[in-house]
Image (cartoon, rainbow, N blue to C red; front, side):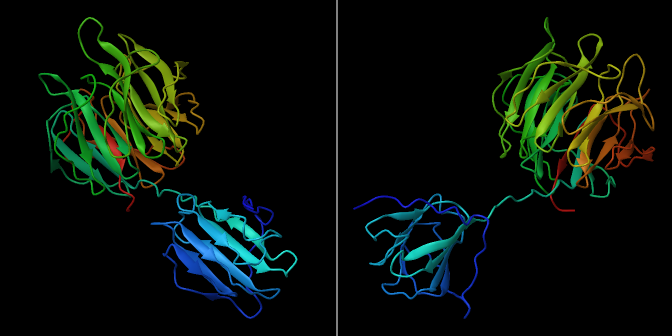
Length: 418
């Protein structure tokens, strides 16, 4: 007779208890077969192969054996239990008993000859790691080809000579949780689709030939916890504004164009919110706009949402408070110092009069796990100043910047290390 004894879930909220005399844990099992002994515990590592576990041929009521998924691989390589002539939940050893759930642990107790071995508890240990927050930031490119690192306290470092092709009007975003990517922009003579990856030490890599439509004055944001998206922008010609996106996977590889949703525009900005989604907001189509487009966890851009607050362009945006976002500054017939907070559902709040120097063509990034920084920009000339944002979205007064004054740059978070 053959069949399947289903995983026993009645003990899912129970605990694994050792026998009165104690339980002896054995070395990790990596072999494809093992014969186990009563009153022992076994970590079964099925990374390289499945494992058949032969139970003792004789047992006494109360004997106990614990089997635990050592490497969380039982869903790939299951364990099979051979009850070795004794009953297993009242069935003979002709039945096949598999356990195939990652993180599972099985507490087998021998109940006697009538029922045999019984899973007294059959639990799955949840594995839900929380990715550490991004701690550092980098400002790079723009009207002067340098970069400036920002530490986890929001302190901006001195200039580092730029790497790759100098350009402005580009965009930057975090990907992979602790790395960054800068992409697209204008070189002074041509639109570009180049990208430059930034490692988790803040080092910018050489140019990578881009994928997709060359453009500038676009935006980028992280989404889905470890990926990024570039969207919208300006291409010149008869239809200068575009509504398209390029997704970036968690290795920093940029995908081909996806026809965008919503109003084609430039001078737009984007940021992550809600821990795994993104929002594009504001921009310009010949006049300043107040609208947003939400991006879901798969990188799909939603339709236009009529914005709240002052329509404007060439502003900046960043995440703060771990799951919220802020749009601030920008231009609309004058240089603005105001902000709009975004809650963790992507709802944009009304204008709040800003703090610090009104300006446009600046950049912003998250830093320190739950804070943000706005930096540089233009107001009658290029600026070198920053404004820190605390974890409740309050913008601080101007801090005289470090490094070369510049505008039309980009910024992004990187590094899990403070």
